[in-house]
Image 1: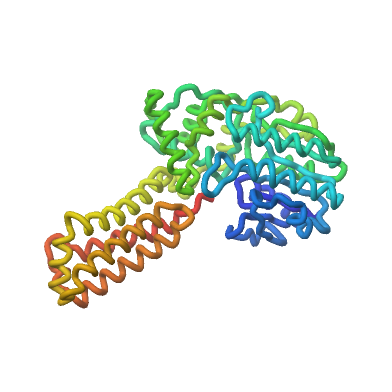
Image 2: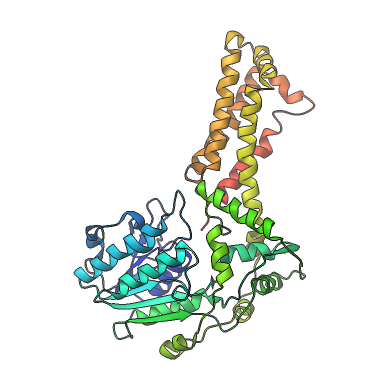
Length: 429
């Protein structure tokens, strides 16, 4: 079959593309503009911004010749890079209308477990509205509502759990409800089942694992999987938890996607449990437990690297941003005189003052670019270029800086290397 998969670079979308391609289907992967194409998992890649695809004509050219659609697009919370109303409602509705108009009857749509029982956040509300809009269409629709999805690939909450497992002292959040985590392989297998034209349609299924676990128990299982001793735990007071979630919201305004935001708090308090029996009865798929999945695939060094780097990553970007912005501010204020004197030593003369100011502004702009997620890559390359410029110009104009006790030029090298590390771990998925 020819299958169009939206959200193809996401956790679920990527696995669905790989599973369908492995079974011989021709996959057209729909990705966000500027995303890395899935060369090995899709026959064709097209770029569509789901949040802006409000008209059926946007989808018409991509749906011609398509036999089925799998909608895996989702967003947790509004930010400069995410529009949950546009993604879950407006864009999804346009896609469903286009499918009906072009007679692409089979549509598999991913929602979220429990949205029909409670809507504590805009995430749940818009997900439920998207479900309703699909049900109104004359299509062979299937709505899948998975719990927290875990697999070898991780993103969002699943990545957070692995990061928490690396901490020797694990923070415990209050008011967290049970989870029935579900394995990514089981989710992809479910799509492969329902993609068949003869499969049941107009059904809503909850994809939930066999065990009810607390978040602490999930983290503890990952820690055992890594081969580490049990961690000590500490319960965070409510004010500390609220501060963490508020900080996540602030970071989200800069374009990053931290899993700990106010929406996550509301959804965690609701929990992610459901009834997997109808899913099992209809598909014959037996949901695998987390412990069985981890035992089947031992942890490798790359898994431990990811867990250990998870909380170091935000620290790296915070430090680099603060370093450049702080350097610029100091050069414009308390360090201005010393900067001018240093420039005078190079023979800059009347250009010393303007040179210090120009360098300070460049530092601040680089720091701001690193902090703002859409421009982080450019900011890091700018920082590397500035560092190289400072090394070369310092060497040519004032080589004595290499001999100074505090090593102002020597210290640029480890900072330079850290920028390359930041470039390597910049992407969330």
